[in-house]
Length: 254
Image (tube, rainbow, N blue to C red; front, top):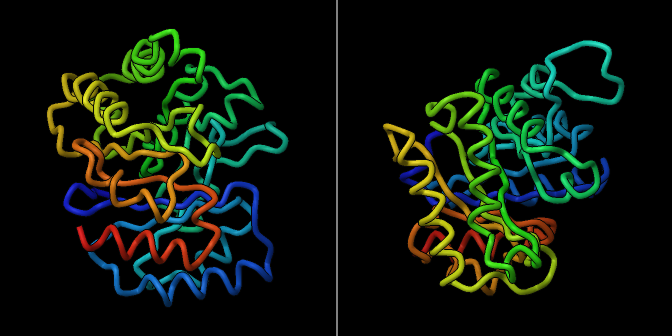
């Protein structure tokens, strides 16, 4: 999924949805977002609804992905879902390392790295979430925290692993707060991430960086205009068809 020439818009449904809700929601998105072919739009849905996303969104300009994956391909791992399973539904993108999972399930950087690698091995695009909590931001160690998250993957799998991937800078303290990080904070961190990644990747145009953390229709354009930001990752806003449309409509005018 090479998207450097397009602004990236990714919606994360998190643990929301039902068969009835999705039927209307997916169809409405398909209709309302059909004009935005100059954007790269992806909706990450819960595992059980991948089949529904595939059925309804097939042939549209909306890609679909999921929110996590197992680090193993198969075996006695009750409750896990493998990369090959989600690939059966033509899933193109997988979120890995989201802070909500790290907090609730104590995922280590090594565990996230293994998942990242599994996504790449199955020819899907990993969306790696990195970011610091409020204590780390106030202590001034945010770059150290983000660096460790990224370098773990580089150390285990080498410099080419990030080619064709997406990095989401998503400060934990901004998620669900109704207040995104400042443009200065975002630009500085994106520049830091790019220097860290690009110094190890030959084709630096093949790595995209997006911002996530309280993205909405009011701030989406400002966020996308920040130097170094290739797009946005939104949570709550993606569940409202009209707000999803307003965000895409405003970004495509940039």
